[in-house]
Length: 340
Image 1 (tube, helix red, strand yellow):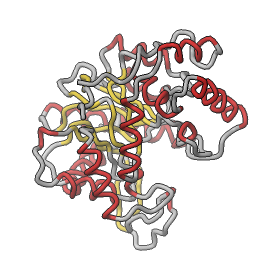
Image 2: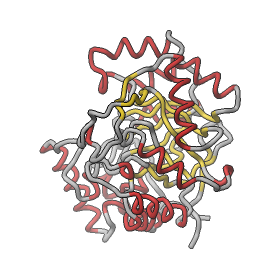
Image 3: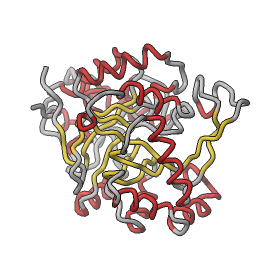
Image 4: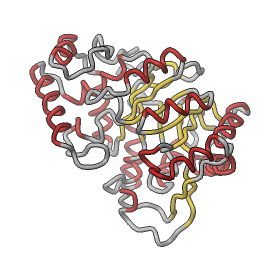
């Protein structure tokens, strides 16, 4: 089996596999995942040479970090790239119930937003303990923005920009405890503001530059020009491009469903799985380092690896563009994810 290629993350010295494992699903997003299945999924990803793993304290209310840490115990630290996040402190709370924030069986902790200097530092130290590592490769500010916080956005933004949150990230990077800093968000507009406010290395942008929607195209162009790496999360738009009736973690608007069906129809003409096109498309942009996919079973790992490695005809992309299903200025893949 050929290894997945790796790409540099912006100006940093990090290289990420072009397909990465998002560890939210392993923590029981919507449906439970037991310990044995989670471990088997991580092992399957490792066997497929997926060496980029993204987690967060929020996922399963610390369950994801604990499972990832247990799997990585004893493995050579230079052999993988690990990302986690700050912005929420996890406080013990025995009243937490199944289904909180979409987690099927969360651990008994309650997330409390804290983007301040002390909050970032404490979150980082807690993550080191749960993950069992001495450093984090990529540390991301999680879910800052108006989409998450609404009228409280300015309060949290001040904590990040004036209360020392960004300063804490820079200190950790300067000390060598973190190799890259950035944002993990679902809205490109706040990432644009953040890049103007702090010297960030990367952005994990979920669901906003995919086969389904390319509204963030010009933001990605700006990232490429500035040497900021982009990790594309949610390439299936919460599962819509993988056969699930979800979009942005909720129900699917009729116009979005119509567009997804049109994409599927064109892919079917070329005998290409829609999922394969969705995984390959974002990587055509020069800013994109890796596509991050949530996986909850070894079978899903195998399926995603097969889709990502599948050779795709150039004519497919031309047909999608001709039918106005891809932004006219979006870069088009030449073929499959390169291997080697």
